Length: 203
Image (cartoon, rainbow, N blue to C red; front, side):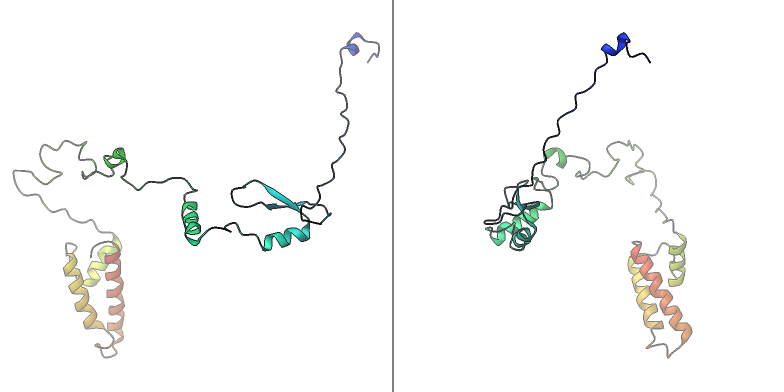
């Protein structure tokens, strides 16, 4: 590298910035205190983002007596808490807007009925030539086992399931079976089967 090259004239370097003297931390804002105020404490309601600066001892004292809701009545505090759930933004009940009320979600029409043409009446059950066959419920394995435990057909109605359950419970209840272990097992199986059918909407 040659130091007398013409290219050295075009090289520029940044000037070193003069280091700014570090500012001393502000003093504590507590009356009569001259310690360093390095701990922030919130000013209060309607002054969000503003802070007092206190020393460690005085920020503890300030926080012990700090109350964000000071000056508010119980009703105003309850209202604030309720509005805080939605982030203090306005809300409306479902269906207040006309556009929302007329939407398919709020409509009385069944889903898809306004899109599907049904000239033969298969969907609505209005076919003129002959009665509609009742739809068979497709049972899952546990549901089929529950019907079998109860001694019922898959087409049993809700009232039939309930009456059969009452009949079996009376028959196999420990107070009525005279201490028969097999009857107790049957009693448990009937209760489990009924609960499964009830949870799945059969009764």
